[in-house]
Length: 212
Length: 230
Image (cartoon, each protein chain N blue to C red):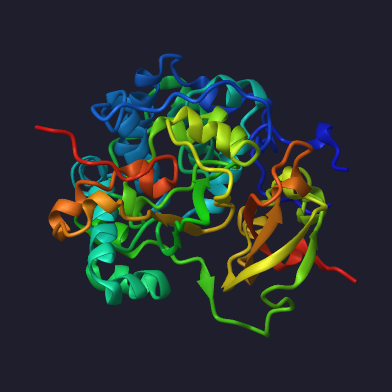
């Protein structure tokens, strides 16, 4: 009998269940042990958090979409040489090593989900929002996308087909929304304000920026 | 038909579920401070190179059903990370029970991620693509049939990325992505075994009794998940 490395080989009780029950204390307990044992540099953990809290987020994707709307040559590169152009711009990396851009058209609306876990294009959209990781979204997006979109306030006309992309591999999908007619003629930095995160997942459409 | 009794709890595509609660623009990126700590520990722990992202996913989905369903998102990450550190021998169960390491403070492990390497590590990522070995079996536009998820597993219970809702279904090859690391082996430390990876398009009407003609679902499938349609 071959012995494979499996989660439940030797113990009925998972090691994690030995930690304190309150989640915040549980994390603290584990981190204390890992730091004491030299397995984790707490400054590295701080640096990772700082990247995702303050630097990597949907503003990166919005800038790319706005530029694609403004510059057809850039759009062609973004769609056809996605990883190359993202790497050149310094926007590649962890959980976005293989990105495919899917373009909305009057005939087709794209929607992205990960039914098996929570795969998401981190380098261009940041950390996924809670609803993207929820059982409800993961369960329903592939089966009843039109009802799901309606819960986000998006009504897709019957003649526009829906393509749902289930991110089951390391390919990450980024939706290129259609540019709203009212935004034509705006410059790139103004256009970026029209591109919200959900429009790049497919659960939203570009919107005029909120009045300030 | 697939056997619904065999469908694991993490494989939830198509399940009945309640309404979705969209977030609000001013919601914080991390709802609780400990959430970000779990994220940071998980990314830093993974950067040690002792396990792959496929292993991490497999250990999260292998949490007991009661834990998987009652835990919040970052609790699942934390539980799987704890179990992995113990299973790989970096930490002992006694240390977890006592909340203390068994010996004195250790210098930073050779494989541990130090803060100076964080930016480069995040920017580099870890590509799953590998050089093409032989030409792919399937061509764009070709009809294929998916296997059953258990038929793609290299051991039981094992890891697969073929969801039950798309199992035993007929679809069409939409893209060929080149060779990618096979999660079914890599999750279990059985090697990367790269295979051609395809995006396969299925008609919603073929997947669901209430599926809408014209709408489609695309699932990324490794070559061993697919059979030619004869």
